[in-house]
Amino acid sequence: MEAGRPSRTAMRAAHARARHQADPQRVFTDPLASKILHLGPAELTPPPDDPVARYNIRFVAARSRFAEDSLASAVTAGTQQAVILGAGLDTFACRNPHTGLTVFEVDHPDTQEWKRHRMAAAGMAVPPSLAFAPVDFERDPLAAALDSAGLDRTRAAFFIWLGVTPYLTRDAVLTTLRFVAEHTAPVHVVFDYYLEPPSAMAPELRTAHEAATRRVAELGEPWLSYFTPDGLADELRAMQLTDIEDLPGPELLARYLDGPTPDADAFSGHVLRAGRATAR
Image 1: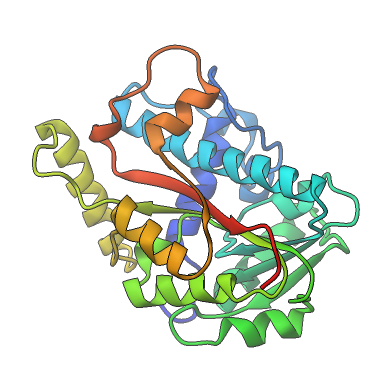
Image 2: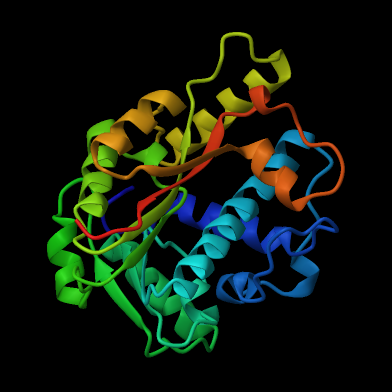
């Protein structure tokens, strides 16, 4: 992203969550998604007829649903700290239904300042359970930012990291995951990642993928990293994050939607939950 400007891909993800609220097959409910964008009902159109665009919007919604469902299970087990890495315009902290859960939002300082202004303009107060931790993932130490914000490394924590890893280098992604794994207390993380597009991808899907790649590059936020499920699982196990659930996007959507879902080989987005139920 450009210095002094908020993340434009964060805005795109926020619009996807807001548009999803008009989807007759809604898998994720977020009544604040449109409010933080200052959008009225007339501006929230249903997903387009294009199956690839419709799938992408639902994938953004489903990954948030999965993350928040997984967090709820962790809270039931005693977790009282949630860290949202690359929070963008995510509204969970303002919808937080869990008494006693502190939410730490980590993001680039420019994006975070932009979010504060949007919240204020929308009449959305910063809840007392929310703490901001500004950081540039490629340059700043994540540990120092979260320490300053008050994260207790001796108490269980749950990390949510959505819509970020493709825009970071492989080294930056693995460094962040190692930081999560080094949490002294029990810890879990939900994040998404992308596979290298298969050579046998259908022509219309490859065209859509190449168009998406160009769009994010033109926004100054190109995709920089891809992973394989087996390779990523090996990396996570080496970090002692051995409780792993890795879902291709269509398989994730099948949990929440009735009827057929797209072929899992046709789309490259995965959502993964990994963690450790014991202290180090």
